[in-house]
Length: 108
Image (cartoon, rainbow, N blue to C red; front, side, top):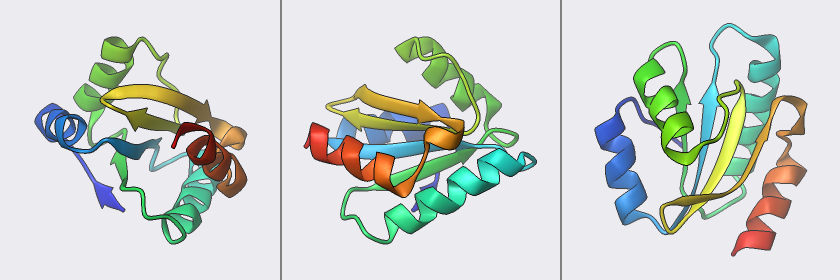
């Protein structure tokens, strides 16, 4: 799992990786902390590239993703991208190891 911070990093990632996960994570929210732990466990069991952004550190990037893909910003929020487009997303308590696995299985 790798942290990304800028719109440029995200654009390069979207252009180069066919399938990847991105999580928007709040550094101060306990719900986000729980979702991030689920995401972290998931990243240990998958070969799909996984990234995250800390909303407090990367507000312009978080807003860019929400506006470009017309996905209302939530935190925490998990998004699965395929061919540079979101194919699945979930937020808050819906971010679990199982939901991430199911999203991946349905979109491979």
